[in-house]
Length: 172
Length: 249
Image (cartoon, rainbow over all chains, first blue to last red):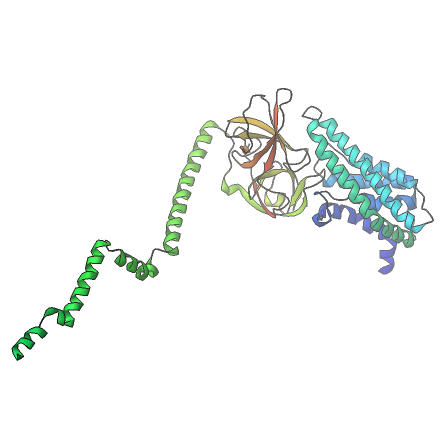
């Protein structure tokens, strides 16, 4: 049983991403906004398994998360695909402390990218209906999400990276 | 001599009884002059335990409540009858399904709640969801056991609303923050802070006259339209139980 969990730990956490996305624990939020959870899984996964795997699993995560949200006109897929691909190109630094901060910065950047792409979709869709009204709440959402994702990433990503690495199973 | 002494002791002011009567007389004169105030004050203290107290108050409040309820029912029946004559949208208490909120996303881009009642319980896409305070949103998606509700604050939400004071219809759109915007397609609309906004009686998507919110602030008029920030009466981030209304289209 232990061996099974150790080997499948990446997939167990993959399943856990949509659950925490739905759970939306308010006590972890800031201004009602949550960290962008899928990036915490996608970053270590892509760093270990490379750009192509990152891109594929970015697509998978996007498909699952889109199915959980009701916004039929907007999608998270482009942001997650791009993040998965970019994260796969990042190599681990030899300094452990520096790595922690890098996780934070990279996740913040990824969150900014995903948030901006999502905002552009909303902007494009609502172009005729008072576009200017959307700017302030959207910037607030993006900034709060970037801050929270960057804040939690050093703790979560470094732990997940260590666990994924030690599971010793590379995605084929 | 003895006779004289007897006479002198028989004077009225030598009798104790006379002084008692005189005292009583003076007291009664005082009572008369003060118009019985001592009696009234005395009565105040002794009757205090028997005043119409809390119980009496409850009886009266209950009567008022019953009267209001009867009036409300009569008006509701009248309203339903008139709406039937005009062939307008309607909803009744029999079509309500109570549901608990099992997932809540009230911040960020995605503003939705998931309820523990689904198609198995008769929930359908397009049903209206109300909570304590008023309208929350509409059912956008159902599974066998759950239903997902797009909140009024979601960028996907657009509903027709009615501003009662100025008797005008408007469009309420969600922007991804806690305050949806009311768009009135008239630059001269006399909307004011504090105006009450409800679902439009002419709406085909929502039941009529469901409370929605209050005008929080008004923006500068822009391109022949006026926009206002709406503070919602029902707070989705705090509500745990909601009711799903079936809409007959």
